[in-house]
Length: 236
Ligand code: BV8
Image (cartoon, rainbow, N blue to C red; front, top):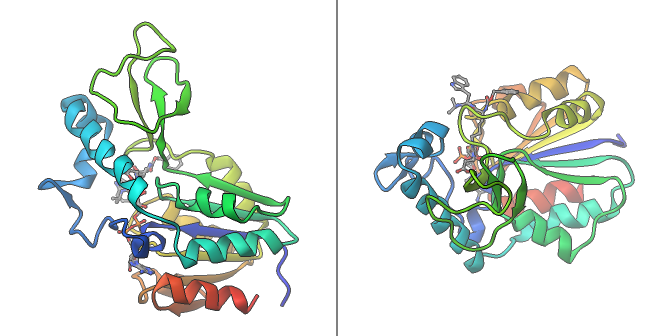
Protein backbone atom coordinates (compact mmCIF):
# COMPACT_ATOMS: atom_id res chain seq x y z
CA UNK A 1 0.00 0.00 0.00
CA UNK A 2 1.58 3.30 -1.02
CA UNK A 3 1.04 6.19 1.37
CA UNK A 4 0.88 9.83 0.36
CA UNK A 5 0.30 11.93 3.46
CA UNK A 6 2.10 10.95 6.65
CA UNK A 7 1.59 12.32 10.17
CA UNK A 8 4.05 11.25 12.87
CA UNK A 9 3.48 12.11 16.56
CA UNK A 10 6.40 11.77 18.95
CA UNK A 11 6.66 11.88 22.75
CA UNK A 12 9.37 11.68 25.38
CA UNK A 13 10.15 8.04 24.53
CA UNK A 14 11.89 9.00 21.27
CA UNK A 15 14.41 11.10 23.24
CA UNK A 16 14.85 8.60 26.10
CA UNK A 17 17.86 6.82 24.53
CA UNK A 18 19.53 10.21 24.04
CA UNK A 19 19.49 10.54 27.83
CA UNK A 20 16.50 12.91 28.14
CA UNK A 21 14.33 11.55 31.01
CA UNK A 22 10.71 10.77 30.13
CA UNK A 23 7.88 12.22 32.18
CA UNK A 24 6.29 9.20 33.73
CA UNK A 25 9.26 6.89 34.10
CA UNK A 26 10.75 9.25 36.68
CA UNK A 27 7.42 8.72 38.54
CA UNK A 28 6.50 12.15 37.15
CA UNK A 29 8.28 13.93 39.96
CA UNK A 30 10.78 16.75 39.83
CA UNK A 31 12.34 17.92 43.13
CA UNK A 32 9.54 16.01 44.85
CA UNK A 33 6.84 17.95 43.02
CA UNK A 34 4.47 16.54 40.38
CA UNK A 35 5.38 17.79 36.90
CA UNK A 36 1.67 18.49 36.38
CA UNK A 37 1.96 21.00 39.26
CA UNK A 38 5.20 22.65 38.09
CA UNK A 39 4.28 22.83 34.37
CA UNK A 40 1.19 25.02 34.91
CA UNK A 41 0.43 28.77 34.83
CA UNK A 42 -0.62 28.47 38.50
CA UNK A 43 2.71 26.84 39.40
CA UNK A 44 4.56 29.61 37.58
CA UNK A 45 2.50 32.37 39.26
CA UNK A 46 3.03 30.79 42.69
CA UNK A 47 6.79 30.26 42.37
CA UNK A 48 8.28 31.64 39.14
CA UNK A 49 11.86 31.05 40.32
CA UNK A 50 11.19 27.32 40.88
CA UNK A 51 9.50 26.92 37.49
CA UNK A 52 12.23 28.89 35.69
CA UNK A 53 14.84 26.67 37.40
CA UNK A 54 12.93 23.55 36.22
CA UNK A 55 13.35 24.77 32.63
CA UNK A 56 16.86 26.22 33.11
CA UNK A 57 18.09 22.77 34.19
CA UNK A 58 16.44 21.05 31.20
CA UNK A 59 17.70 23.76 28.78
CA UNK A 60 21.27 23.32 30.07
CA UNK A 61 20.95 19.55 29.65
CA UNK A 62 20.36 19.96 25.89
CA UNK A 63 24.09 20.73 25.49
CA UNK A 64 24.89 17.20 26.74
CA UNK A 65 22.52 15.18 24.55
CA UNK A 66 22.47 14.25 20.85
CA UNK A 67 19.80 13.04 18.42
CA UNK A 68 19.64 9.23 18.35
CA UNK A 69 19.04 6.68 15.57
CA UNK A 70 15.26 7.18 15.83
CA UNK A 71 15.50 10.95 15.26
CA UNK A 72 17.90 10.29 12.38
CA UNK A 73 15.62 7.64 10.81
CA UNK A 74 12.80 10.21 10.81
CA UNK A 75 15.09 12.78 9.16
CA UNK A 76 16.17 10.26 6.50
CA UNK A 77 12.52 9.41 5.80
CA UNK A 78 11.65 13.13 5.58
CA UNK A 79 14.45 13.60 3.04
CA UNK A 80 12.96 10.98 0.70
CA UNK A 81 9.21 11.32 1.38
CA UNK A 82 7.43 12.51 -1.81
CA UNK A 83 4.05 13.45 -0.24
CA UNK A 84 2.98 15.52 2.74
CA UNK A 85 4.85 14.74 5.99
CA UNK A 86 3.89 16.48 9.25
CA UNK A 87 6.04 15.61 12.29
CA UNK A 88 4.22 16.76 15.46
CA UNK A 89 6.26 16.45 18.62
CA UNK A 90 5.11 16.83 22.23
CA UNK A 91 8.78 17.16 23.14
CA UNK A 92 10.30 20.53 23.97
CA UNK A 93 13.88 19.40 23.27
CA UNK A 94 15.59 20.30 19.96
CA UNK A 95 16.68 16.79 18.97
CA UNK A 96 14.32 16.56 15.98
CA UNK A 97 15.43 20.03 14.82
CA UNK A 98 19.09 19.03 14.94
CA UNK A 99 18.47 15.73 13.11
CA UNK A 100 16.67 17.57 10.27
CA UNK A 101 19.46 20.16 10.10
CA UNK A 102 21.94 17.30 9.55
CA UNK A 103 19.68 15.66 6.89
CA UNK A 104 17.55 18.37 5.21
CA UNK A 105 13.93 17.28 4.51
CA UNK A 106 12.05 17.26 1.19
CA UNK A 107 9.65 20.11 0.35
CA UNK A 108 6.49 18.51 1.83
CA UNK A 109 7.91 18.24 5.37
CA UNK A 110 6.87 20.30 8.38
CA UNK A 111 7.88 20.02 12.09
CA UNK A 112 5.55 21.34 14.81
CA UNK A 113 6.45 21.55 18.51
CA UNK A 114 2.87 21.49 19.83
CA UNK A 115 3.98 21.92 23.46
CA UNK A 116 6.57 24.64 22.74
CA UNK A 117 10.37 24.62 22.84
CA UNK A 118 13.00 24.85 25.60
CA UNK A 119 15.19 27.06 23.38
CA UNK A 120 12.54 29.77 22.99
CA UNK A 121 11.13 32.41 25.37
CA UNK A 122 7.93 34.45 25.21
CA UNK A 123 7.15 37.96 26.48
CA UNK A 124 4.24 37.75 28.95
CA UNK A 125 2.72 41.03 27.69
CA UNK A 126 3.43 41.27 23.94
CA UNK A 127 3.48 37.49 23.25
CA UNK A 128 6.64 37.96 21.14
CA UNK A 129 8.60 34.67 20.92
CA UNK A 130 12.39 34.70 20.54
CA UNK A 131 15.25 32.20 20.69
CA UNK A 132 16.65 31.73 24.22
CA UNK A 133 19.64 29.46 24.94
CA UNK A 134 20.69 30.58 28.44
CA UNK A 135 19.04 30.64 31.87
CA UNK A 136 16.00 32.79 32.62
CA UNK A 137 15.33 34.48 35.98
CA UNK A 138 11.92 34.77 37.64
CA UNK A 139 11.70 38.46 36.65
CA UNK A 140 13.65 38.33 33.38
CA UNK A 141 13.08 41.76 31.78
CA UNK A 142 11.40 41.64 28.38
CA UNK A 143 12.96 43.71 25.57
CA UNK A 144 9.53 43.62 23.88
CA UNK A 145 7.32 45.35 26.47
CA UNK A 146 8.12 47.61 29.44
CA UNK A 147 5.68 45.73 31.72
CA UNK A 148 6.45 42.22 30.42
CA UNK A 149 8.84 39.53 31.64
CA UNK A 150 10.22 36.59 29.63
CA UNK A 151 8.72 33.12 30.36
CA UNK A 152 9.56 29.77 28.79
CA UNK A 153 7.82 29.31 25.41
CA UNK A 154 6.30 26.09 26.75
CA UNK A 155 2.62 25.01 26.67
CA UNK A 156 1.74 24.22 30.30
CA UNK A 157 -1.15 22.04 31.49
CA UNK A 158 -4.33 24.06 31.01
CA UNK A 159 -2.83 26.09 28.14
CA UNK A 160 -3.74 25.60 24.48
CA UNK A 161 -1.27 23.57 22.39
CA UNK A 162 0.27 25.33 19.40
CA UNK A 163 -0.90 25.10 15.75
CA UNK A 164 -3.91 22.87 16.55
CA UNK A 165 -5.83 23.86 13.37
CA UNK A 166 -2.83 22.97 11.21
CA UNK A 167 -2.49 19.63 13.02
CA UNK A 168 -6.21 18.83 12.69
CA UNK A 169 -6.10 19.61 8.93
CA UNK A 170 -3.14 17.26 8.48
CA UNK A 171 -4.89 14.49 10.46
CA UNK A 172 -8.00 14.89 8.27
CA UNK A 173 -5.88 14.34 5.14
CA UNK A 174 -3.44 11.69 6.35
CA UNK A 175 -3.38 8.08 5.17
CA UNK A 176 -0.64 6.91 7.53
CA UNK A 177 -0.41 7.95 11.23
CA UNK A 178 2.55 6.77 13.32
CA UNK A 179 2.75 7.45 17.08
CA UNK A 180 6.24 7.04 18.57
CA UNK A 181 7.32 6.96 22.24
CA UNK A 182 4.26 8.48 23.87
CA UNK A 183 2.19 7.06 26.72
CA UNK A 184 -1.01 8.68 25.43
CA UNK A 185 -1.50 10.27 28.86
CA UNK A 186 -1.85 13.86 27.65
CA UNK A 187 -4.62 15.38 25.53
CA UNK A 188 -5.26 16.57 22.89
CA UNK A 189 -2.23 14.67 21.49
CA UNK A 190 -3.61 11.38 22.85
CA UNK A 191 -6.73 11.88 20.70
CA UNK A 192 -4.89 12.28 17.38
CA UNK A 193 -5.08 8.55 16.60
CA UNK A 194 -8.89 8.68 16.68
CA UNK A 195 -8.88 11.63 14.25
CA UNK A 196 -6.52 9.71 11.94
CA UNK A 197 -8.72 6.59 12.08
CA UNK A 198 -11.71 8.76 11.24
CA UNK A 199 -9.86 9.82 8.08
CA UNK A 200 -9.35 6.17 7.16
CA UNK A 201 -5.60 6.28 7.85
CA UNK A 202 -3.51 3.24 8.68
CA UNK A 203 -2.46 3.75 12.33
CA UNK A 204 0.74 2.38 13.89
CA UNK A 205 2.03 2.63 17.49
CA UNK A 206 5.79 2.35 18.11
CA UNK A 207 6.80 2.01 21.77
CA UNK A 208 8.79 -0.15 24.19
CA UNK A 209 5.62 -2.12 24.83
CA UNK A 210 1.89 -1.78 24.08
CA UNK A 211 0.42 1.35 25.71
CA UNK A 212 -3.02 1.56 27.32
CA UNK A 213 -4.23 2.97 23.97
CA UNK A 214 -2.74 0.14 21.86
CA UNK A 215 -6.22 -1.12 20.88
CA UNK A 216 -6.84 2.18 19.06
CA UNK A 217 -4.06 1.36 16.55
CA UNK A 218 -4.20 -1.02 13.57
CA UNK A 219 -0.65 -2.17 14.29
CA UNK A 220 2.15 -1.99 16.85
CA UNK A 221 5.94 -2.21 16.52
CA UNK A 222 7.58 -2.74 19.90
CA UNK A 223 11.13 -2.29 21.14
CA UNK A 224 13.54 0.58 21.83
CA UNK A 225 12.86 3.46 19.42
CA UNK A 226 16.44 3.36 18.06
CA UNK A 227 15.67 -0.16 16.76
CA UNK A 228 11.90 -0.18 16.16
CA UNK A 229 11.69 3.18 14.30
CA UNK A 230 14.36 2.52 11.63
CA UNK A 231 13.01 -1.05 11.20
CA UNK A 232 9.45 0.17 10.63
CA UNK A 233 10.43 2.98 8.25
CA UNK A 234 12.47 0.50 6.21
CA UNK A 235 9.14 -1.23 5.39
CA UNK A 236 7.70 1.97 3.84
C1 BV8 B 1 -5.37 21.55 26.72
C2 BV8 B 1 5.31 20.84 28.18
C3 BV8 B 1 -7.33 22.70 25.97
C4 BV8 B 1 5.69 20.94 29.62
C5 BV8 B 1 3.50 19.28 28.30
C6 BV8 B 1 -8.66 15.12 32.44
C7 BV8 B 1 -8.83 14.18 31.42
C8 BV8 B 1 -8.31 14.40 30.15
C9 BV8 B 1 -7.59 15.57 29.88
C10 BV8 B 1 -7.41 16.48 30.89
C11 BV8 B 1 -7.94 16.27 32.16
N1 BV8 B 1 -7.59 17.32 32.94
C12 BV8 B 1 -6.88 18.20 32.18
C13 BV8 B 1 -6.78 17.71 30.94
C14 BV8 B 1 -6.08 18.34 29.80
C15 BV8 B 1 -4.59 18.18 29.96
C16 BV8 B 1 -4.21 16.71 30.10
O1 BV8 B 1 -4.24 15.97 29.14
N2 BV8 B 1 -3.85 16.33 31.35
C17 BV8 B 1 -3.45 14.95 31.59
C18 BV8 B 1 -2.31 14.93 32.61
C19 BV8 B 1 -4.68 14.18 32.09
N3 BV8 B 1 -4.02 18.71 28.75
C20 BV8 B 1 -3.72 20.02 28.67
O2 BV8 B 1 -3.83 20.80 29.60
C21 BV8 B 1 -3.28 20.51 27.31
N4 BV8 B 1 -4.07 21.65 26.94
O3 BV8 B 1 -5.99 20.51 26.85
O4 BV8 B 1 -5.96 22.76 26.34
C22 BV8 B 1 -7.42 22.52 24.50
C23 BV8 B 1 -7.55 21.23 23.96
C24 BV8 B 1 -7.66 21.08 22.58
C25 BV8 B 1 -7.60 22.21 21.74
C26 BV8 B 1 -7.44 23.48 22.32
C27 BV8 B 1 -7.36 23.63 23.69
C28 BV8 B 1 -1.82 20.97 27.34
C29 BV8 B 1 -0.94 19.78 27.61
C30 BV8 B 1 0.52 20.21 27.43
C31 BV8 B 1 1.26 20.05 28.74
N5 BV8 B 1 2.67 20.25 28.49
N6 BV8 B 1 4.77 19.52 28.02
C32 BV8 B 1 7.08 20.43 29.76
O5 BV8 B 1 7.58 19.68 28.89
O6 BV8 B 1 7.66 20.77 30.83
S1 BV8 B 1 2.96 17.69 28.33
C33 BV8 B 1 4.21 16.61 28.66
O7 BV8 B 1 3.63 15.30 28.65
C34 BV8 B 1 5.30 16.54 27.62
O8 BV8 B 1 5.08 17.33 26.48
C35 BV8 B 1 5.27 15.08 27.21
O9 BV8 B 1 5.69 14.87 25.93
C36 BV8 B 1 3.80 14.84 27.33
C37 BV8 B 1 3.26 13.48 27.18
O10 BV8 B 1 4.09 12.61 27.81
P1 BV8 B 1 4.89 11.57 26.87
O11 BV8 B 1 5.66 12.32 25.86
O12 BV8 B 1 3.94 10.54 26.37
O13 BV8 B 1 5.90 10.99 27.91
P2 BV8 B 1 5.62 9.85 29.00
O14 BV8 B 1 6.75 9.87 29.96
O15 BV8 B 1 4.21 9.96 29.49
O16 BV8 B 1 5.69 8.48 28.15
C38 BV8 B 1 6.91 8.10 27.57
C39 BV8 B 1 6.57 6.94 26.62
O17 BV8 B 1 7.77 6.57 25.95
C40 BV8 B 1 6.06 5.71 27.34
O18 BV8 B 1 4.96 5.17 26.62
C41 BV8 B 1 7.26 4.76 27.30
O19 BV8 B 1 6.85 3.39 27.21
C42 BV8 B 1 7.93 5.18 26.03
N7 BV8 B 1 9.37 4.93 25.99
C43 BV8 B 1 10.29 5.10 27.00
N8 BV8 B 1 11.51 4.76 26.54
C44 BV8 B 1 11.38 4.40 25.24
C45 BV8 B 1 10.03 4.50 24.89
N9 BV8 B 1 9.57 4.20 23.65
C46 BV8 B 1 10.48 3.78 22.76
N10 BV8 B 1 11.79 3.66 23.01
C47 BV8 B 1 12.29 3.96 24.23
N11 BV8 B 1 13.59 3.83 24.48
